[in-house]
Amino acid sequence: MLIDSHCHLDRLNEESSGDTNTILNRARAAGVEKFLCIATNLDGFDAVIDIALEHNDVFCSAGVHPLQKHQVKVDYQRLIQQARHEKVIAVGETGLDYYYSPDNAELQRESLTIHIQAAREVNKPLIIHTRDAQQDTLSIIRQEKAQSVGGILHCFTESFDMAKEAVELGFYISFSGILTFKTAQKLREVAKAIPLDRILVETDCPWLAPVPFRGKENQPAYVVEVAKQLAELHNLSYEDIAQQTTSNFYQLFPQCAS
Ligand code: NI
Image (cartoon, rainbow, N blue to C red):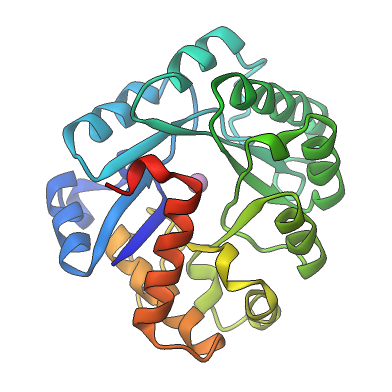
């Protein structure tokens, strides 16, 4: 058992990875039992919800990614309407990315605030992307009381201090294939230090394929490599890490457990 807590199934290239059924079957055969398919903008929501409605083991989110530059201001009512859907279990991905997009930081902060308000209104956890924006992310989380719904800091690459604060606020820390990269020694130290009951695994596919699949399009079956790496870091068996991260996911999303 394993869960891909963050994938973009609507973005996979059929020519390189096969159609959605093929991709999901490959992952199921590798032991992946649930998939959280992440929306990146409101216009793209239909594609995401369609996949979730078609497969019992796929759930999805509603939200606008911080790097969607063309989004001027997030339409709150539209976001709420999407977020209320039964198969939508989380709000996001939202967040702050000052690494790739420092120029519209103000807009990103406004968008994160709107997403937290929406998450609290529909009472669903948040999916948060954060890069080079540790302090602002944490202070907006606090200011808007995001801890009342909790959520995931996804594709985590920031410091242990940030992870620790987020965990204290009730958030989970999700690791992607980056954890397997040669250059990610520092991140592996962070992953080693985070309490096991707060760790999740994800692919963030089609991006960030883990070792030994770098250069290929990423897909949910490869989440196995992230779990293997975590098992090694924590000196546990692969089965133990798979079970622990899966039960963590169900702790946050109990409605997915059945
Ligand atoms: Ni993503």
